[in-house]
Amino acid sequence: MGPGLGNWSVQPPLSARTVEELIDILDVARIDQACTFAPSWEGGDFDDFEYSKANRVIHEGERRYPDRLIGVCRINPNLATKSLDEMKRCHDDYGFKGLKLHPDSEFFSINNPLMRPFLDLAADYRWPIFLHAGFYPLSQPALLLPVAQDYPTLNFLLLHLGYRFTTDAVLIAQRCPNVFLETSADSSASAIRQVLSQLGSERVIFGSDLPTTRPAEVIDKIRMQPNLSAEGGAQVLGGNIRRLLGGAN
Amino acid sequence: VIIDAHTHVGPAFIDHPPLLPGVTGDQIVEIMDRAGIDKACSFAPQWEGPHFVDPEFHQANRAVYESSKNHPERLIGFARVDPHRGPKALDEMRRCHDAYGFRGIKLHPLWEHFAADNLRLLAPILELCGDYGWPTVWHTGYYPTCQPALYMDLAEHFPEINMVLFHLSYAHTGDAIIAANRYPNIHLETAANSLATSIQEVITKVSPRQFLYGSDLPYHDPADVLAKIVKQPLLTVEARDLALGGNMARLLHMDVE
Image 1: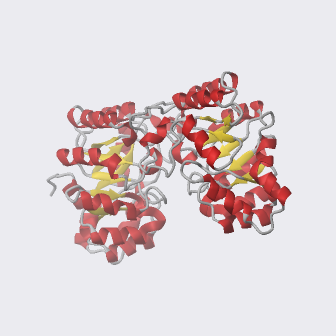
Image 2: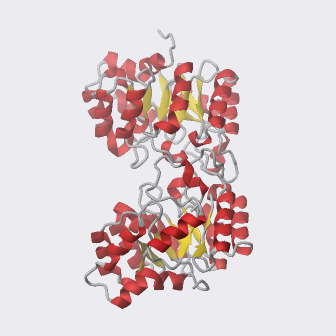
Image 3: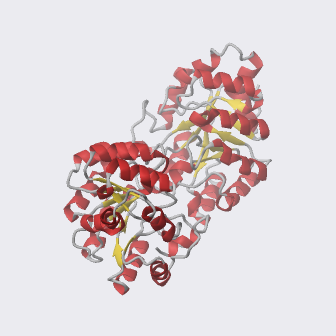
């Protein structure tokens, strides 16, 4: 959610530039709560390379709808100490509950040693890491393996089921109990079935990537899974992420 | 004349040390002397923080200018910008043209995170390149931002602008050949660890006017890349001369013997 969406080269099918628009989308899809973070900064009229404006917008939206929105911090790790300061602000002043990292958008890899200060701080905060995944050479899931092993207390969500790298994402999750696969964007029903059968419902987390995807479509693909019990569905649709977020409920 | 279409120089190497030392112009020229290279297109390495903070390439372009100032016959400055910076990127290009006398621009869709077919973002930059007569050189080779098929839209909209696709587009060389065969303003370049078999494929399928040498010095040793070209059994003497310098000289509007 946020004003940065106005600069996107391809406009998403829904509009979530303001918190009211975001809440409307959640209401229509009957979603109780949402982890929300800034979209990729793509330049243009909204100049926010450091995500400081975007994080504040998330905070203001969350303050108006505290029962619906869970703020997640976004940073550009290349800005080093400035980004650590942004994380601190998001934790101390905003009360955010997680960290979104986007290797393709901000150009880094999760296994770069320069990421350690951010991961250390996230571990202190007990924040789960929402990690964009799915494209070689910066965000393929295999890069997470050594990091997830080095940070056993940190939980990682591999977003988008790793896109075309779903099989790799499953292999990483099988080796790292702190890695979870998340369904956002246009994950196919067959990819969701694959990860459920290989990892079980306790390791798969619903996410939509709204406004780029209509959340009801993703929820339908989860609900239609033939081998998913009511209990398993509840885990995927909220139980798992609630556990990772600790205090948030 | 041998022209290397692809060399990096500058202080950003503090955060990603290359194979060979390439911080100063003197170091680059020393490497060129060893490899027998006459001239080199020279531009900044990627900016990826954290010790040298320069997301707008403002300091990096100035460092390229300063490093090439003492070697006007050897180093040919190329600008780098982040297209997301909009008017600021255009200002940086003007500075590179008016104050630094640069002769082209390097664009990197992966690093600066834009798609190579984003005409809305790139049109102002390419239009200014047209005014300056600048060739454009591009990192290519990775889906989904810089695979060669994406460059066809640009090549079609800006037929007068020459484009050099670096790295023979890595694993996408076959697609790069298709794009080059359709658009005469697309050229394919050998930087980094291009396979000898990929070079051979390009030589046999692409016009000799559209294939050229670059090394990615100092990340790679130019002698390695040169050897892979010179040893090609199917390369004629005329085609070799075009590849090693003639084509880049034409793109730079240079008179060479």
